[in-house]
Length: 172
Image (cartoon, rainbow, N blue to C red; front, side, top):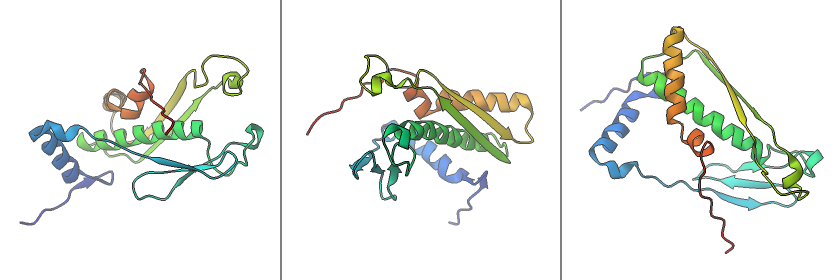
């Protein structure tokens, strides 16, 4: 049997459809575990490795005591959210037959360094994160708004960041 792959927005619809069908037939296949390993490289430099991919380097800006050789962890967090949203836009637009000509997501957030630096107790993380999404498509504004709402309602990283998630950090 010959299988023809159909793509839109560089997304393989057959592969996505096969995954959806597999999970519908066996809901247990929806549960997944993801892993990363981080190795310290001295100073504030480290690198995370996921699966068999090249390490993703991390460092701090000079003003925070680093050498500014790579994005820092809070920038990587913004990037993780943006990348997850991009996957959501590509997947959901493709499933809806919407061609994306261009997609840009700009993210920012503010941190108060008092807690990180040990100067006070409180929140060491972002107070808020803002993402501005720009989509170039021939789809009308109502269609794009529906796409946007679908993406926001299904983003794994967005959901993780927007609710309290138990985090366990053990010393081995």
